[in-house]
Amino acid sequence: MRSKLFFVVSLVVALAASTSLAAEKEYKWDGFELTDSGMELAAMGGFVEGEAFAVRFQPDPGDYPVTLKRVDLLFAGQMGEAATTKQVGYKIFADLGTSAQPGAELASGTASLTSIDLASGSGQIEQLPSVDIQADNVVVNSGGIRVAFYQGWTGTPSITADGSTMSPTIVSNVNYILAADPFGQGFDWYKAESLGVSGNWVMRLVVETAGGPVEDVIEQDTTVDSLEVTSISPDSGLDSEATAVIILGEGFEAGLSLFIGSTQVDAEFITSITSTKITATVPSGLAVGFHDVVVENPGGNTAILGDGFEVISGQGELALDSVVPGEGYTDEETPIKLLGAGFFEGVAVFVGATELPTGNVTVTSDTLIDAVVPAGLEPGVYTLLIQGDQGEVASAANAFTVKERDVDVIDPEVLAVSPNWGGEDTEFEISVVGENFQDGARVKLSGVKLATVFIDAETLQAT
View (cartoon, rainbow, N blue to C red):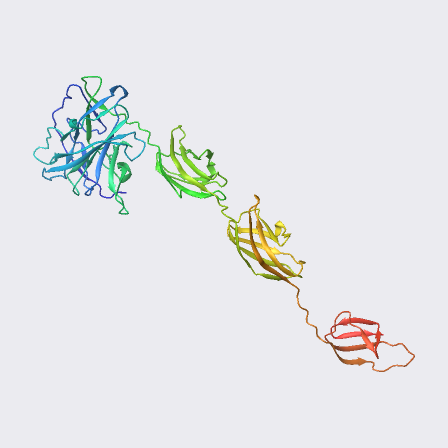
């Protein structure tokens, strides 16, 4: 918000009524009248050198072609500031009223303006300062007209507005400011209301119409459609995921509809609406490319930000860079991580010619897959391969080794035999006590294998 943009002054005016010249028509938006008294006016003290103020005028359809003759404006300083003469630049643009930016430049020039001392004498003002633009020979056959004045100084004198923050009168989309960019990147046009201005610039455009002499002052239609979409942030998202966005503009109404291209955003994904901001989530699955951002109010008014949102492919080029760990054993499952790019749900993972079960593959992100190599693969060195549903392939040669686990052979040790004697012709049972016995071990007596029962690693029974 532009702070301290203007100084509010009260002015009692007792002005002589003006009479429009023959063949002239005057367009205006402000409510200031020469016969008014006690009207609250605002001398704009917030301009810096190089900035400009402007008004868009809209001739009636039956007036065309119109020839521009002069601009009348209330050019004044702060209360008590003496009258002074300033050299100003001016430009005239075509303007359709669809953006803060004007259309093509039609003419430009310089002029001298003498400010009005709002506090001098009895406060009487005989006429508004004027700039004659007949020499520019501007004839307009259709559309709106924007007239802009450029200040070569900071502060007042400057244009005056017809309202205050306590009594706002401003009409949307007709008063503009060319202001310094807050990031130091030059100047840009803004709607005056977006910078805190609450009144209309007291500026009038006098023209000669095709209809001949007219003695009339035309009050502009103030029922201007103010719905506008100015930006969306971020202005792009992946097709594979939803994207939270903020849409800025003006004239947004509760119950509006939001479209990204031809796809309507479900109401449940529009989380908040103010007159100037929409918070929403763009759904996944939109076609790759640029899409219009369309806002439609409940009454049917529509605003479009052309090609405002770009949908980018979330798949990218499939690539497999590494596998961690790079080895496992044939007798057990091995969890692995595949690192790369372009991964997406539904890819298949192969260890050599063996496709991993879908339950063993989790696409954690577009750069990481968590997988499990099953037990039972033959020992060897394998290539890891990822394959997409459209046949795209990424691989890492000799990336995973399956090993056979080494079994340590430990010799058994006999510590005792009980009983340690028996008859030559008699069958008897003995217990062998020791260490490192394994299931399947056999007891031998003088080279003869005895029937053996494995009890545990320390006990065998033989007959």
